[in-house]
Amino acid sequence: MNQVNDILSLIGRAGRNADGSYTRTCYSSAYFEAVSIVEKIMIKLGMATERDAAGNIHGYLPGTGKGLKSIIIGSHLDTVPSGGLFDGAYGVAGGLEVIRRLQEEGKTLRHPIEVYGFNAEESSPLGGTFGSRAVAGLVTSDQPGLEDALKEHGLTVQKILDSKRDFSDAKCYLELHIEQGDYLYNEGLKIGVVNGIVGVIRYKVTAVGHSNHAGTTMMKNRKDAMVAMARLIVEADRRCRQIDDSLVLTVGTIRCWPGSENVIPGRVECTFEMRHMDKGKTDALICDIRKIANAIGTVTFEITKNIDKGAVYCDEHLMKVIGEAAGRADISHVVMPSGAGHDANPMAYRLPIGMIFVPSKEGLSHCGEEWTDPEDLENGAEVLYRTVLALDCED
Ligand code: HGY
Ligand code: MN
Ligand code: MN
Image (cartoon, rainbow, N blue to C red; front, side, top):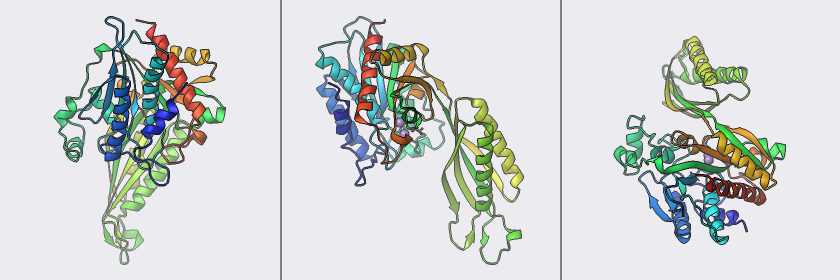
């Protein structure tokens, strides 16, 4: 009997807001409440558990075989502010359900099996996919702003670098996740066999003009950083749509100085985030954005890259095993890319990755309205379970 919904509801006891959304930001008390819930379930399942300085929770169950490598299942337990129940937590619940079901059916795997609940996957001053990057050894001491961001949590960079794990004992990484887009939902399909995760590149863009009196400075004399930034954003958006239908650009944050109603803004800072499977497309967009900025003329623009998570591809063999598992369960499935970033991205630098998607109602995610039907959640857990059983027959 598939209990992934029950496990997810237990995790959902942490960080629930009055409006039904969830807020479990990284290193928050609500986040660690979810960690404790997962830790208790892991212990009940007989797993050896461990927490690390990056805020991750890890469970381990040995296999019966000799010298076989671990099958690792993971996702994140943090959420965006006022996010949904499913993003991240569903993948952790799916991993725990695999182990619960093995025990319910009296089965033991030949391979060790591990489950990670990662911290700080969502964007934050730590840079996003932080817990999984720490475990994968991809956090570097020169990451902009890292030291100050860690100080907030009483941590040092060295403690994070020490969270790095050696993956020579691991066979593969699997992640079960909601699609967060509307493709499966619109097509009436039940499972996405993910073939790749888009690259995520973030720039800090600053317009530097000149603050001045809002009443006495005529329009022709202004060096208005807000107007210049607004023009850049509109032009960049237009160019993005011209380059490629699946190239996306998001200006998700804006700050302006001095930030007073009667002063022309002298400085405006934004983040420009772009995503695509093909680096050539994002390179073309930022090149055009620089040209547009230079042509605006009334202010100077500073454009610095903050984050560059390259696109990664899922392992062909794992995709085949996942597709066959869905086929055997008679569940409709399709190969598709992920427009969202995931912890599987850093993992792909260390070991073969596979991802399984289930539909998101109307494609909504990162909001309280995020929803996936219980049967769809069970389908995903079923395919994950069958995938693990099939992989366990291999060396
Ligand atoms: O931003 C993302 O794509 C992920 O949901 N954190
Ligand atoms: Mn996620
Ligand atoms: Mn997310």
